[in-house]
Image (cartoon, rainbow, N blue to C red; front, side, top):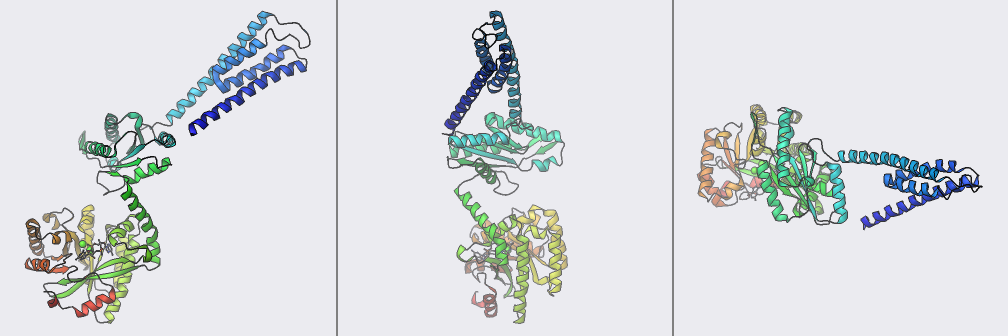
Length: 546
Ligand code: C2E
Ligand code: CA
Ligand code: CA
């Protein structure tokens, strides 16, 4: 429809131009005659019309107009307007020739001009790095596909670690990587469908595809592209994230499909290659992300968060030894959302420090109330790498601990094994200094971070917490043996072991037999709000459970 309107537009524009040229040439003739000037004046003014025609239609137009004007200004026109003396035919032929000469020259200049500007336009559409089309062209193409209502998909390829690599190697190595990458892309996809945003970001428009087969194709492409490559003395493994956004005619903006492909490629772990599709599930996750990220700060301001405490029972001392502090969010009518969902979001949007600061302040207030009731129990909070790596945060904790006269040995810090693996050296250094000060370090979710027992001995810790995943599978021999060896190895290293997520007496018995030090789980209690926890603590008798 739009295409048709465009054609109509061009036609009506041309109509107006023809009219203008015709009116001008007639007016010139009429003027010349009315004011009694000679035909010379008329023929000079005709050059304006020829130039105008060249401007509108280049050589084709200027030559046509020159011919018409030249021919009509010949035998039809007398030398002087009020006389009847006709021009000599030679004069007339000469005039036509001069008109044509001018028309050809001016037309040529306008032709060249247009070619040049087209060339510049084309150049603006090509990326210097790769020779592929750039985003200017991409958006033109996306716009036109959307306009035509065509079914197509957009693939966004991000070479995540190329910028990092470029900091350490010469630029010609990066050029070689780009060259190999673009060559590989050209061998799999048609070049006219390839686009590049930056040297590490590429896009593909695919018009004919079957969704499943195409995802498989991209997965195979990824396997090849992320293989280790050797250049000179270096070997690299590119981390590549691929995001695909399928458009079945339901997207009306080029920017929307572009963003979808881009965001899809942003899923998964930061330094892990993968192919991700922007689908319904992803859209819902994104909506939840937007909703939650938009309300975390308000929740902090309005006191919508509260703390719960999950008892951790010592089998060695047969007592409720300490508690893990867990966060809850009362969102009223907006429904429940667990910390496993909102904590990672808070981390991503940079609000996790605000949350942990709030937790510590709240914890201190509630612990003071416990103390007034004569209860003094150790608690452990969960922290992420953001806080642990933040000097100012650690300094703030020190100040708060001193100001409130809190014994450091009563403060436990739980940090997941995976977090430690992210930046092992630095985090290990920090954990060592925290331990030296007296804080108790727990390695959370043990067993889920692909760490070997040998590596564990390098990490400074007091306690390891065996993840619920393994407790749930204790009936499987390998897992049973793994837990058994872990417990004895950790004991040899001088640490203690807590088993998480214990829900049955049977699990408790098995863990007890293996020498596990402490138990946390629904078998004893779910996480409880402060008052409930006080009640539980007062009434606790391990014999009720054994
Ligand atoms: P986590 O640190 O591993 O915490 C243990 C989780 O297991 C808690 O879930 C707890 O309620 C649950 N759990 C304990 N025993 C059982 C059991 O017997 N059965 C079952 N099914 N579940 C059990 P929760 O409170 O939903 O927390 C989930 C995760 O969210 C936590 O895992 C932790 O990673 C994070 N989280 C919770 N509170 C905080 C917080 O204050 N700060 C930070 N940074 N993370 C937190
Ligand atoms: Ca924990
Ligand atoms: Ca855990």
